[in-house]
Image (cartoon, rainbow, N blue to C red; front, side, top):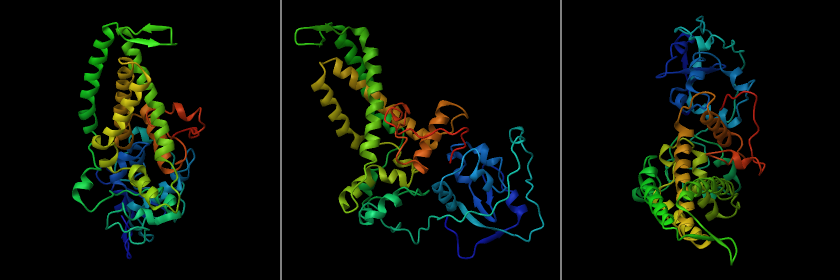
Length: 372
């Protein structure tokens, strides 16, 4: 939400009344923010924000234990709705009873508002009223900075409704399209290996029979191989730095992945459209078929395909899910959000952080997580 020229003025009592999931307001100095729409998306959980509703969160933003990034502060400016009346005699005491979980929360230190750069749709580098696909290539050297300053709004690529529709996918379409193929190929691989005719040549003269009971191991190996492929695609393709003078490479990067960093909570573009994914998946099938014998290649491929489905679903959940505090998914969500808001050149693992460590792209741990 962009600030108006004449911001509304609220009393502290009025701000304190907005302390529910349906309407949650917070303060940053004298600035008032309606963060109701962000509660479910907050990596630290909605309870953390609700426990501070109606109060100044400047201390929480600065930490310790976690100092929120400049992008997180810029992101918050989208929810600005007005100013608090400085002359109001009403205190900021909230009107609802504190839960036991918030009894341990220390009183936040009152600090002046942080005047960071906010997203202003009127002065942004692109015209948000028009499709962005053909605009971003003209940003040149400014593209990399612009695309890594996230906004909370959907993006339109094309003027054509048909072309636009091909870029959007509901999360459930991924398992709906690919899991039947996973099940069929699993059955096919099992029956093929059961014929005891599949041989894996270790040398030109020596080979071994691949038995039917090897299928689960090959399947899991395929899933493991996918985690490495996922890491490589994300790091070297999705996060390539297109030359500032190349209009077409900038446009391609934006369509592939840049748009996701610009609008990380655009629910229609968190998973890859099956129609666009099909040629890539088909290419991997042909590649595996050339490297490994029949039966083995399909077993590895179907495991990798299942890994891809899991990856897309986890990626969606990391943006829209609310994992339990302290769980593996909660840590993974915080890790991925740091990748979006602060460490865009690190943290390339989605389903696992495994490959980030040997390739020195892991995001440093903090003593206690309180994510952006």
